[in-house]
Image 1 (cartoon, rainbow, N blue to C red):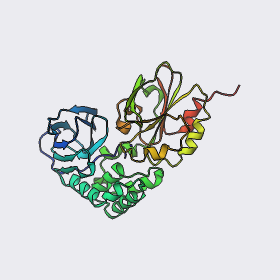
Image 2 (cartoon, rainbow, N blue to C red):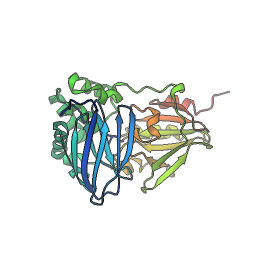
Image 3 (tube, rainbow, N blue to C red):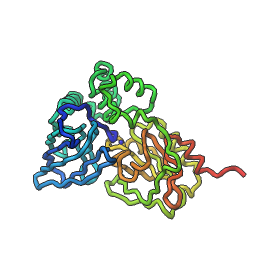
Image 4 (cartoon, rainbow, N blue to C red):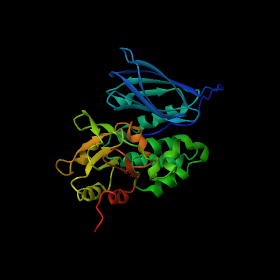
Length: 328
């Protein structure tokens, strides 16, 4: 997802009112429209925001606890990410063609995050995420009482392959610096949803490598496996080899489920010829995909011919059992 990158925290500038309202004003040039997505007090908020011809906009939301707010253009390309909470008034300014230069002001936490990104700009643009990951690990070790440590792990850290390591780093941050409203997507653990809680997906609208959007029908096509992942997917070749062994009647939808597409082409360049690739700009929060209850990546979902999700979870072996005919 770059991960659908996460929520800048800490209640800096809390107001005494009870409205739980925050405000974001901004001016982002070079963009025709703005989409704002965050998980608010009453569930997922996914709204289009009006902008004038000069790129000015204003948005009001509600959040009693700190939430990560993602700002994207009309194609779902990430522009900026901030953490907002009741009482915040954030100001954003920049050019959509230079997202690293978009500035955020309004509270200390967002400004400190901006400073970290500025100081490590070369790492953020490096196709190899290892240097940025190392810098984040160092910051987390040295700042256990700083909520920015939590924000960096959730929003900018790339290597989620070692869950024990991630849990240890997160656990080393003091409780007051890692509010549950931000960390629950990780601390809830990669649990598969029960069948009774699974949704029915009729369609998914995803982007392809040529930047065109495609509406994919999940009904009337037999069984479908949705394979969702984020860079780096270290065991990708193993996953693909297993998927190639599936019955030809099973359709596979391969989805990059994060905002950052910088390494997408590089990762998929060695995939089998004709392999279909898609991109979900909003990652786990993308409309439709967010109903799968994703708590980690990679993630797998199986749907039947009516669009009913029969499995949604992190275990490929479990998903494959639903797709492989039992021996007589």
